[in-house]
Image (cartoon, rainbow, N blue to C red; front, side, top):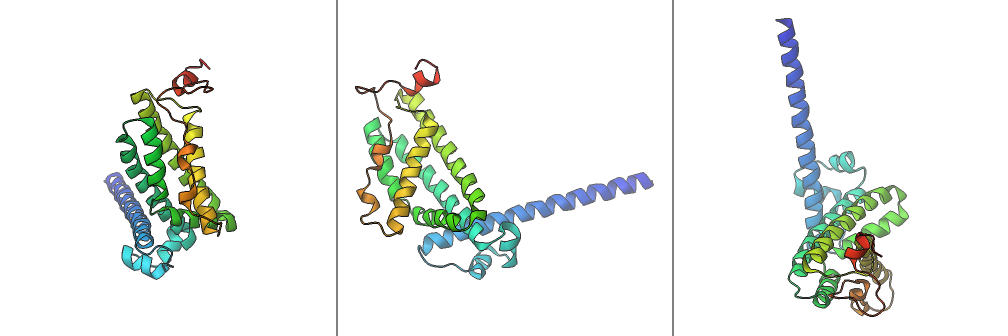
Length: 223
């Protein structure tokens, strides 16, 4: 009998712990989502912890509890917006009838993404606050992998070719786009529209003179 009561208490404790973790994950997710929404609605404006907590149905001290700081939460929210925008960009890319149109449409759409200013602020914050660097890096790696998978499926499905491995392609493209936004925000003359972002992509329908390898050949070790 005692054994059954002990097992029941153990089961109840595990159930309570699971519910607590689920509530915590839900609160954390709401804080990120509401911060992303507020930043999108008020680009460039300062959003307070109190506003974020109120919108998420949480307490202000939960921002620190789950994220360590408001800046860390802002980084999470900025990249959530970027990943959502990137999925929309993928739909635009899939509609392109050829590689040249793909490069042009992707570049134009990326530079118009509403999440870019917030991500630029997150990157700048990570420069001045090293404790944010691991958070930024995790999100960047996720972005790179997501983009690499997307382009890999597109290239393989349509028989397109690339000059370099697609992990390098994704990193180069996003580094160019984010770098351009950072330069403009830092006061560099010109706008992101002056950038040939399409030129950062090497995806083509067929090999051009001097281009030695397709992605498929590189992957098979034929290069």
